[in-house]
Length: 136
Ligand code: NI
Image: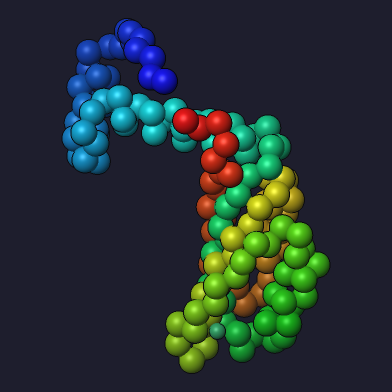
């Protein structure tokens, strides 16, 4: 069920908002506002330690020491947080791995920090998203 409500907003702020709405290709202010609200709610889920989902992307050199063994060991240790793993060989030395993760934000951030700080990991990024409950 949709509900309408009025919003008071400074004119200049609304003009900037409308430009952003057009630039992003939204068909209406409302649709863009719904997405802004959902983003804020997902951010709150991560602050409130609710169960969330995410992806952890790692780019690493698999010839560095026993990095592949260390990564595998840590992933087994945290198997309850890892739903799926995609591995791509980017070139002769470099791997890209995407882990789909699910759990409490503190645990997922901890896992991301441990994997991302291993020697030979060139870049890591945790993308924070949601299990999608209660977002309309
Ligand atoms: Ni590889």
